[in-house]
Length: 232
Image (cartoon, rainbow, N blue to C red; front, side, top):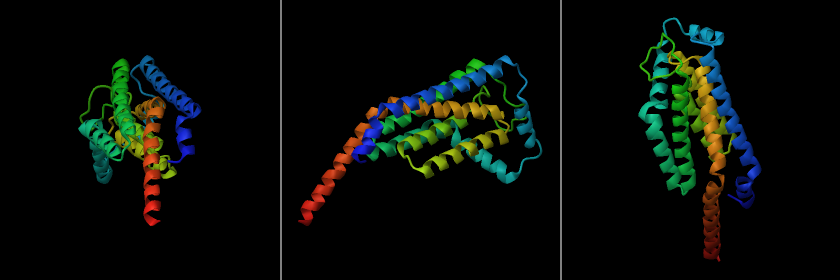
């Protein structure tokens, strides 16, 4: 990473903006949860409409896909295997603080989801076709997908990474509603919390992550100097 890119990481203005956006997203999710709680057990009209789109017998290919997403996006895979393997890959690529950022964002997002779930205690759709844990709002699977997508976009700021991340979140949200494990608004809340947590922690880890990039830049410069010396 060149000096200008490192300066971008250290600049407090984009980091303050990230933190502000992250807090706003989490606040919006909590506000949506409060709206769900105080309006009573009846779901929103858009929730009912979306749920009824998949009320008929499910398509076998889509059902297999949704169940696969359920496995990949939750349970031990999402809360342990993916964060640990992702952090290990970052660590081995000499991005130690980025690895810790990924782990912290994953854990922080999951904990925040559980706090909100137990605060509002929304019931899941009655026609759910899988076994799931307590609380419908927010969707933990979608929150986890959004956290991974935002972390990836922060660490690897390329357009294609952002596009793949957005598609991943949308597919996860679709799969959760296709299985009737969540209302549509649950997935919105999950996406807001997952993205918000990742943005807040990106700002918190910005200076620490810059140390990784400093070391990578120094090692790159040393290798270039050694190569030049060898040629001469």
